[in-house]
Image (cartoon, rainbow, N blue to C red; front, side, top):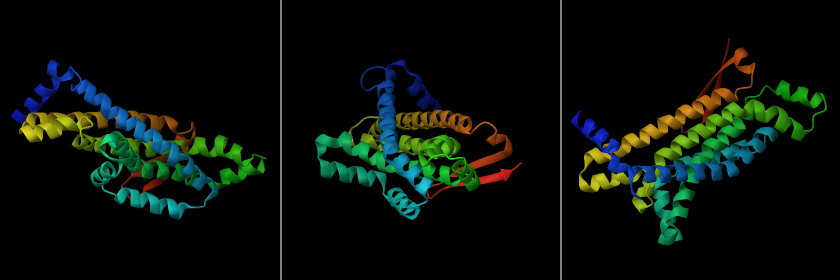
Length: 242
């Protein structure tokens, strides 16, 4: 209990939030890396996932790529990219590492959202004369949005947890107190940094959980209760008919 109280005292000390190396600045750096990584990964993965879900082609390739990306150790990839790109490009190396980490969840969320749609709905849309683009934007994207938001949620949480390794190459973030505390044997600082990362992850998880619930089309949730399970290997959709 003493360690926990010491860690909380360290977090809430006013001086810890001041200056360029304060917790406010480190939190901003952590969020900046997270937002940029998920945005870049989304530009790559979401259109690819939609194309796979709409056409039904390339799913095996996407699953393979996602599996390979998940198997790559983030810290090892970061160090490798720093060595390849040079120490002057450490931010780019870190950002690329986090993008690779975010792509699998976003890709899976995009194409599984389309695959979960009842094909009779798509056939009905074609039967009334909708073009493929109209089906994509007026039927598939709205109905698959909840799973996509779930994929974004999973990607954000993974990146938030992994951005802590950026401190190993002197890029700041909430991992810096953890690494500094270990070197100084200041375990209150180590625990305080870990609690900050955990609190940030919980806040973001709650926000995206609410967004995911709001993304379910009106009326669909009343007929079908959906459970989304995100693991390191796959995103699955379970339906329980009420």
